Image (cartoon, rainbow, N blue to C red):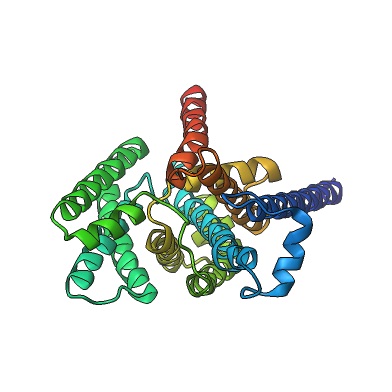
Length: 349
């Protein structure tokens, strides 16, 4: 009887692994299709057969090749990497707080990072300095960690997860108000830079930024995959994780640092982007039919990448030549998912 049960469990695991692989393959195909559409569609339309020729010709061969190499390709790569980063950060925070609607935007972490980047930008630009990418990431990471520390302090005081979310939203509002106060008293050049960045957009992405983002995001993805087993145990309650030898304190610290770093990368290079961190992990788990970190983490990253790449395409083409903020588009698609999750939780209670 025990052997039969073991065989049945093994078959279930194999079936879920196969399903996760199929889901990842489908997401990669969808991502490739969106990337091609993003290369073709824009203020200057480019035919699909010409795309490969222009890519092979290099960035300096013609105006169209410059559009592909210098504008669209780095923007696509950035949206893919940062979309995956947001999704991973949301998955980690949902695991950490055991709350399905926890993510960097809702908990105010993105707003805290936005405030410190805005403050640094005003100080540096006001002194006629240059705001480099490393400085942006460092400022955003400082804000993310500070806000996370505040949220964790609140989490120790409140008794319900709903109050934690409310507290996070209030922290976000305070940080947003402080950022708006800074913008109101900034000089003209700082205001232009802050307003363009603070709306949430992948426009203006450069290859140097994409390379730096890739370093952080790929490293974080590798660490999350390496922590899949302890994360799976942690999902089954902290007591169980300790009983199987997981260093819970070290794991919690790793979750905080990785999720804060991923959120900081997004804010530093694209500004605040809403709802991706909530919606994408749940879509990935639904598609894979499991919440096992080893199986769902790649699908989670790819889902966030598809989500942001698609929303960015809509943001820049829907009312062209006027470009929407990507955060506005992600909210349109992500907010209904959050509402559905809240209604589902209420129904289960």
